[in-house]
Image 1 (cartoon, rainbow, N blue to C red):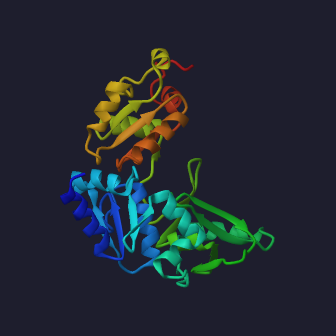
Image 2: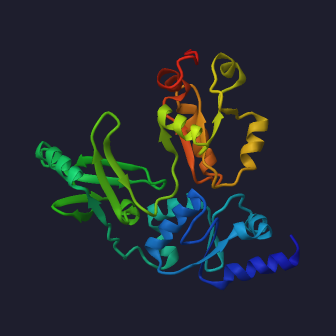
Image 3: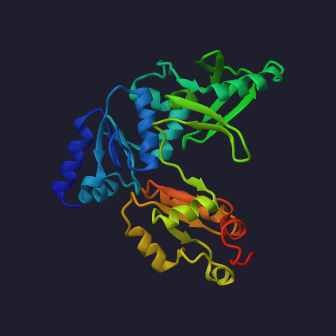
Length: 304
């Protein structure tokens, strides 16, 4: 690293007490890991500085050498390197991050939850047979939701939604900002939970939905299976995710909708999650894999 870049990075980490090197900015994170750290910091401090490494390749590469840390985001507090997403998340869960930031963990979050009439009616039915248990909502760092009935626990934070009361642990309460809960009936139904600030997630699509997207030219499909399985059955529109396919994928604009499939949808889901971590924002997985495609879209594709 040349001295000019080293000085620039040193000046940046000292420019504010809390500095986050990230992909995107506080209002629009461009990767799930950056979004997680932003969500944590937003709940703890009113203001902090962000540096968008996507705007400067020299800063993006240089901060990794400067910190001796291989990934983005990177958090600095008081001019000292704290860590990446996993470390920030662990420190937040333990309460150490609050001490480091000087908040002391004293600020009590105020989770906000809204519930549709359909969801409220379903909740009331469950509560009538709950034996006194309460509605509990857990939100983990990647913003996966767990909605269940359970007893109150020490440190719980309450959130009211009409006549309903939800109990959340402290980390979940910090993440619960404008949570919206709906209930949809039918075989593919159930509770649907979302909030505007959650990072991008892999979207599960049925074979019928994916076929329509492909017909409209809205998505690029990749087959993650090895050559032996592709020889048994294949979807004509799918590109193999071999070396050439990976090179093609990496060259795409990160806003390009991409989808993945395997045999039953398990391996492709993992591949999709990895791609999501590489800044792609519109990532889909074929639910049920090529087996579902054969069953519901194209019976000429062999099942194996």
